[in-house]
Length: 520
Image (cartoon, rainbow, N blue to C red; front, side):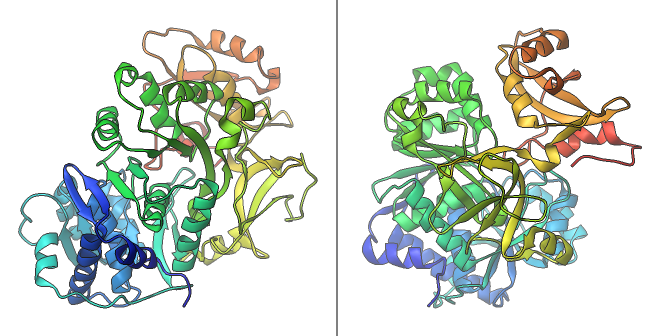
């Protein structure tokens, strides 16, 4: 038998049936209860017409039912399609119709959208209400389906059987459906635990969106470990601090934007954070200034960074807790994305895929059993990404003598100005160190003189009034003059995807309209 995603649930039910599996808004369920519910929900899905390999969507905030959705669809033999909750109705319909999703589970927050989705979608035919109230007319009720359905045997789809179609966050354009197998997701959960281990005593705080693979990866690792999952509907300082205090959450994963909000909120300094033993972060760049503030906020906790992407089943390299300690930070690895996880091959390659010498900047390439099967119905883009057994990530990076990977930038974000390569992450890091800057994104814009000009989009901190000239002068003290922004615009907020990443293509669009050459 190859690896399969429901195996961890079978094991937890066998070993720890009375242990708490989930805590959600005062509701507690054991692993025994979780197994009971999953087997019956799977029976309900099959009764609604689900056949092996059929896609089942989810449009919902985080809850204990989110975990039941994933496990029940796999138990029934189906394929998950978790829908990005931040999309417009048109984008949601695209994801449903693109991969032929006929069944959609929705909670209270998104029931009002179902009429529009049903009217527009060619694939959608059945909707299931997974909220907390009474099911609206025309929707099947989650709890009623569970009560009225018989438990069915696990379909035991495994190995290279398709487990999910995960649409990318869309930071560089129209989302693509990433196809991931049972084996890829199950193995990634196991090797990620090697990079940042926890056992059944842990209490994982699920605050990142669980429709996104970074959140799902953390969720699946919790099932593998057989520990307790503390789930909140979504990120907010109130919800996060309450869950830590009430449920004694011990492990949390966050994108840097979440950590920024947390350290900036005055309530955090008054909160009891003593239960937190581990803080994981990743999915976007982080400044050392923010890290230092996070270290001070959680002085008793270990920190680790994970680098990965949807196409790789989440994590491929970890910067472990050792390099976040005061002594470890002296080793100079804190700005890296760590070293490859067990079972993962990393390479820095040139334009032809040939490995470059250590220290040279090239494209990060990955080879592992966790790499995607391809993009749904996009053979040309699949062939471009998967070449000669390697996944070409589109990330520019370098590797040092010890195998630590330093992500320089997305190749698509690299600016060529006057013949010089300018990596946006370096400029963003310089600007982020200014006391008046709350958030920043750097892009390339058309320049008659330089081909591309370095342009910064800045969100000021409350009360700050620094003008562009002051920020550029600040940058000149930190980085070479040709890397400094030639123009700066100030905005109230940056466009952020559901994965917590800045959607730079939206920032570029107005600048490149009418130009033959575009960036990103």
